[in-house]
Image 1: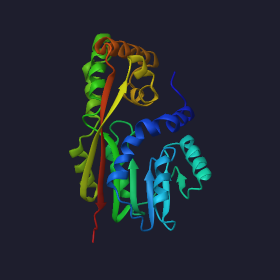
Image 2: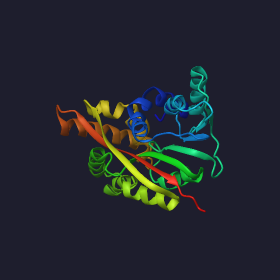
Image 3: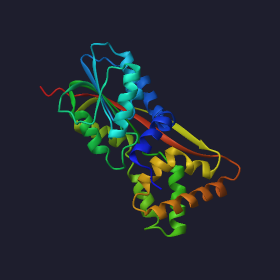
Image 4: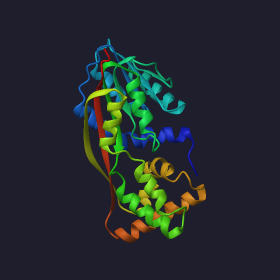
Length: 267
């Protein structure tokens, strides 16, 4: 049974922040030097863990704003910030153009195929000369899962078999494509940094039962199927993993990518 938005928000705070998001935000911590002349916007801050850490590194005079993807995430983020006395303005709002000195955008859980609008929006709210940093998984991620899903779709005659899996693969942008989009959107001095992150599970059941896979990844990839079909695919996927891997743990890799640049001056 699909979980409610509120349940997913708590699961994200308890598990996804550390098991998934941290692998991407480490790239920001390693490669992005925050200046924070006046203000900073963090897009898709989730339950606020990383933006709270960044707040501690900035001068008190710097105003920090953060958007959350829904009201349940917003409630958790605000409560945590209040407890930690972190001066961050969390909201659901869409900000106006040319408003921020620095913009960080978390696209690690965005729906497939939405990266174009996501990049454009991150650049839109940045001022001329502002630094922009975007994190997201890119092409080459999840190959081990997609290979097994193709086999399940084929064996069980779901949809057009390989066509659905090919669409999943195509929904992940390449690093070069993201760079091209960033330049078109108005960024200069564009750079990218990548890290191959490996996720390991002892059994097929452990894999499909994990919050990351069952509640976040698979629902996006299988959204054209009915709830009953989704459960059947997950069951067959777990069986196939155990059959093919035997006593060896199952691993899949993700190409975690950080894209950085500066918004071009128009005059």
